[in-house]
Amino acid sequence: MKPPCLFFGFAASFLFSSLLAIAAPSDPVAALREIEASLTEHGPSISNIDARGEIAKQLDEQVRIKVSSRMSDEEVRSLIPLRDFHLRRIDRALDDLERAEVKEGVQLFKFYSSSVLIKSPSGVVAIDFQEGPIPDNRVEPEESRVGRRTGFHWTPEQRDRLARLVDVSLITHKDYDHASYSLAKRLVEMGKPVIVPEQLRSWWRDLSERLTVPPYETPYRVGPVEIFVMQGRQLDSGEGRETNVYLAKVNGIVFLQAAENGVPISGGLEKGIAAGFRPDVCFSLGASEGQRSIAAVLDKTGPTFRIPIHEYEMTHGGGGNRTGSWYSANRRKLIRRGLAMPLFWGENFQLVPSMFPWKEAK
Image 1: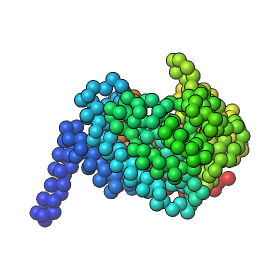
Image 2: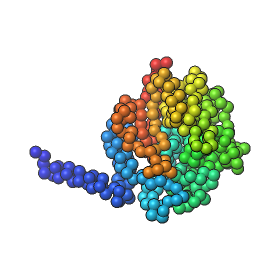
Image 3: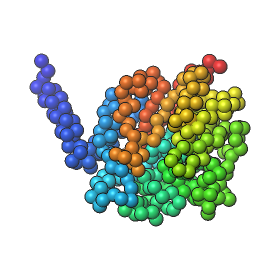
Image 4: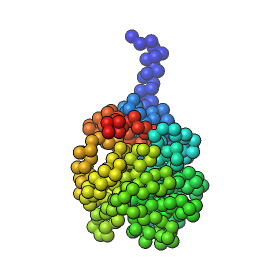
């Protein structure tokens, strides 16, 4: 029999956790503070998979509202706890980004939805950076209607801080959740390269002459990253959005970001692999035919490491894709095998060559 004090402690802990779980929908401030503490205690690692699966479920419960210009005042008010949680996570991430000393591989930082930053000994690369659910990405976020109503965006001081740290920005396409006008404007004013598809130069006319459209299907070095870029396109009911599909090599590790490309690019991908850009880490494989063509090539080349993106894209219904699904069934097995690591807002994760045995097998 357990000593009474130990039993009471266990029972109290269990009851406290249960009450938090029950209270989460009605007390989002308390729930998000608990999630925040749990993330600090249970960082991204295989050993924390069970705890992080529970965190994902709890956060899934908190991200439920579609952000749009048609939101009611009550919906806007209900976003405040999540917005404040997000901004606290950003401050923490910026602190970590500034302090990180990368001596091997890279340190990967996860921000909003598809936004990632990769820090290596030679610099910082931003890929599809965006700071929050602000549908109008042709003005500063606080100048847009949704930004003014929700405040769900970074402060100018946070943006300035990030711009000082980033050396180059890679953007796949013009959709707001993949392209930050605010960061691009700051970077070009500082003389730093912003790599885009041609269509984005028309979208951001005031920046167009200072944006860079890369050469396609040939290795291209820009600052701390070497890229091999393929031309793709996002399919939708109206205009087809031009999309850059990137193979980005940072300190010897190759990242694939196909975003929402929807057309086959398998020929270009095979050419990139032959040029030394065999993907080690995949963010998105694209959509529709694009995804199928990329997956077919990767099936032949062997395993890759997955960093999920595009979750909690909050201009989509119900707050966007969930994170909890990564902790069940086959996706959970990938984490167990050391082939995937879902990251939450503001987290970072070190990637080193020893994590990719296929590199040694060459």
